[in-house]
Image 1 (tube, helix red, strand yellow):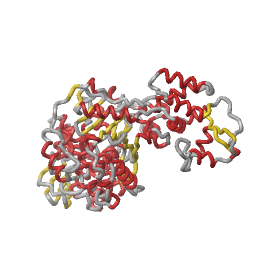
Image 2 (cartoon, rainbow, N blue to C red):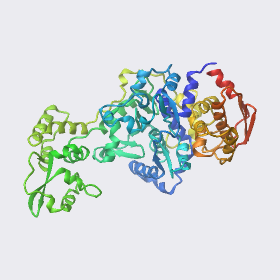
Image 3 (tube, rainbow, N blue to C red):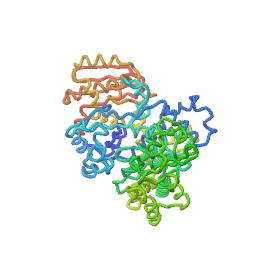
Image 4 (cartoon, one colour):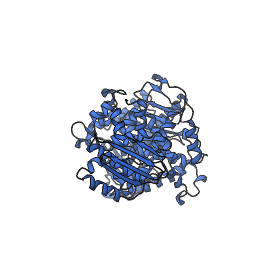
Length: 578
């Protein structure tokens, strides 16, 4: 018996590591659908925080959802959460799917360091990858909403948590379930180092980890917007996923509807571009502090014009409600002590007020080369860095996202549409997905990401459990078999997954310190197999029990998972497919 492509794909839907999602891009949307099927997010609608949300306009609904997510989840990038693997092991597993050189161009764990920005900040140190030597790399796994919620059981976590892909999938599902945003208006985007969503509402909204950015926020020059801009400014978009399909920067075939992708591309480009205005100039200087030394601000003190270096004026924005870039400028400048101002203009600096007047009166369009020349000439009179500053201003106002080129892709075969609308209830959605899964691979994989062994072949789940759960193996290293069994039996008999058939992986049981009997038996099986891979290992389940036979030992647990009676000869099967 040998491994099949479908076994790898389905087992990847269970573990959802960074590399697995890159290899199988359809998994991004399958995770979103698994979250939509989950009763967890549907219960949010019962929270009083969302009372009356149906009467709100779309952006107000989305803002209310954002605050709920901010209050209940934190961003987590603890690289040790899901344990370690090796580059060699992962490359061997996927050698039939992609070559190492292509992977190194698109994945942070395999050599990708991004463009000039990422080289300048030393990306491996930035993400903590520098502590892993040689071929050792962390599993970057994406969490379902249940696994995100369960972080509250870990020490030092008071709320739920998740990494960027987890938060993007959580946002997309809750936008649909709670805020009533149609799936057709939600596009999931992945770059080599980040994941976020573009939501086609108003002028466009980006979700960025726990936060939201409107178009105005994208251009406001604050530290938060600067952080959110990094991925689209410095990386190419490798995957765009939508209800109609996906497109991948590396693969030749795209399944996304071309018209929907054209809409996404046009709307994203529009979101990332803005005319140069007085307010934008000030936001640019807030964003690019190195150019503040080119400017000074004129302001009357006791009726007489005085001047202050731009960097001093921006300094007074910190921690206060007033800004240089909006109607509160007068209040900001009035609050600055008189001794900060100079009676005469500073040499070699342009007066911001005059530059704003020039922008307003000349209606500069940076897409016209002649306008750029005029702008450089105006700024260059008084600042040696004027030409460089104008190029940076142009880049600030006109970000060109490097999204996959649909013209170079061949169209994938038509599939049954998901057919999910905002007016449907959860049970209807689950039934609809189940009815189309034979004709829609994304829907089929959603049931594996959903972890429901009553609706999916158990072997992909079992393969993931026995091959990709290193945390429990490492953590139990100093325990004897007897001590391990006692410890596992002492854990609360509670699964992090609601309902019958849905199971946690062994490392989820270990990390969160709880599990149903079937899950506890699988945890033991994972550790025992690592210790004695040649020993016999068989797990039997019934609706109310789990029985593990490992070598000469027999371990029995009660269960509430209501699995139909079946026997899983784990060791025998693993040897057969290895």
